[in-house]
Image (cartoon, rainbow, N blue to C red; front, side, top):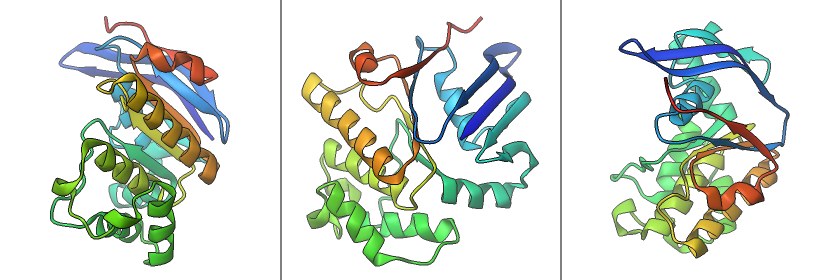
Length: 212
């Protein structure tokens, strides 16, 4: 589903990411592991096309992301990549359902209220459809962010440190949600984390060392 080749990025002359090669097949589940500063978030941003690396290539679903103009990349991302960032970035002026509908709109897809209701129901958020983000608990907000990430049935689902600030019970619940939603979409799942509690749950693991 995606392949990374000769990927390098640095900030202010400090190398934060240096990967020779890595690839994942459709539907596989991966952990990207490493300590703080090892480049996990940078790698996820490169996979999502949020960051253009200094050198190297990210190919996703047969498309080299570097070959897309900014507007094309935004549209491609909206249709093919779901992202759950550390900061959930739910728009506070929109209800939960409207946040999901906005994801459809930004991807250039038809508005599909049935799909929005379907995803919210799958994450036990039906009664929160008309609620604004400030009225959600942390767990509900995280589920809403996952719902927004999968509403367009992405081919790749990315999650950045989704469990590190959670207790053991909520950690397991968050991981279950991500795995279940990825399986429902047939998406390749990539979770960047330093949380050792979830290593046993995900078969494929890609380790990053500390930044030089």
